[in-house]
Length: 347
Image 1 (tube, rainbow, N blue to C red):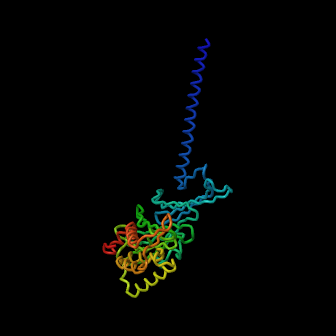
Image 2: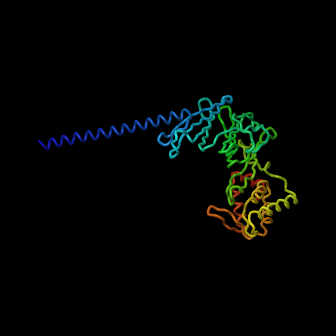
Image 3: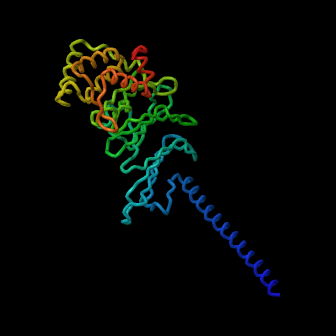
């Protein structure tokens, strides 16, 4: 009898354990469903999904600007990140920029760094540099490529008031948008718009040399001119090429660069590559790579080796090795096809 009771008790206990397991599974399923519903609701509203356990959401704002059938929407939310001071005040802002057609989002971009924001540029204004430009709070729809369809210029502003870090030219077509240009400009890179024969030229800087073999303040930012071709704004050799400098201007340039070397380091046999690199790259980008090599050889004629900055510190390399490094670096540029064409295939 005792043995029968034990068997019956074991069976009841097994049933209870089984029911408890299914209850746990059901509870976890409910939690997952609620979380998915919350995320979907946030996405439908066009607002960023915040994890309540790691971030405390604050004020949400939305700004809508109408451009014909399109709407330009800027959503922002203030929040606290995990690990930040819990003072009750939000200390971070996430901004999402959207272009919508009807109820459909056809383009979006998000920034979350402190101080980042979006602004617009009106290409019809006189050509300007980003540090001096008047940033617009509302987009100007301008036909920039002569096809009768308006475009807007969207700028990602990094940190400071006029530190433009990227630029996008977005075409607002009848039924869809098209990104005609997407360019990274680094920290405060320059950008200019010039109207030419019914279209616009876009002049920007190549940022691949930022911090390369030099200290950041000395990093060169060679200019690139883009024109509308093949459905996009692309680097254009015809507008990048410049007339060959006169001999007197070359002499003045070399004298200026040699003087700069003396300021960088007293020893002329191992000078630091610094502000001398920018003018040499400008010659390459404007179609004068052969002349750039001659200027380089003349400026560093007294140098046995060159000092460059690497992640592990200062390093000495021969002049030939450095020139090979420079040429290899140029080939990594997103605008290399135009640079090579401007130099007739010889760099």
